[in-house]
Length: 259
Image (cartoon, rainbow, N blue to C red):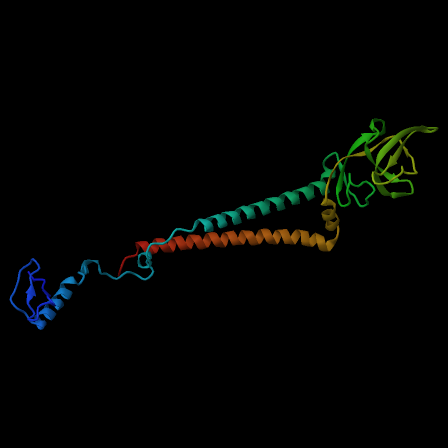
């Protein structure tokens, strides 16, 4: 066993000081330097050669443990997926609503018409779509909103509220008034036969229906949503393919050993 020896600076003759492992006689500075060198050798770390082997560069072990995705990243990815699903859902519902309003009257017992004037605001705002149901004149009551052709121009359809039901020399007639107008209409509508009365309205949808009647906007309303859906679908396919290839690459790197 090697003796651990120190020089005592108080001894001019370089007397060795015993440290518990043993003692020697008077030494020299060279002996101390040799011992210091031996201390360096004995303190050197021992390398386990059995662990030394070549690690493939692509192996995850060469790069250390892979950190799990941060919670913030996972939350952001979840928010993006939810926003994408919400956007597609709203887009599909809006397209279904336009289809129902535009083509529904051909299959169901109701009619629709775009409100283009403000005489019935705020009940029927401009740009809304009024929904009508069929009813006989005998069933119409004061306060209902009815649809009729303007006596001054039969090609113009008017939706005004029944202000009063008046008995005339030729039978009953409706006195109408717009909610935004200060006075009743000057014309009289015969209370005979059957017609349409308002059961509700859909705000702002009338603008989209009017745009569908223009070739340019009709093309845009068809192409833009279709392009967005196509891009989102291609993106999802590409992302899933990339993740699958990345997982396969990791699995191959883990199973591949040194050649």
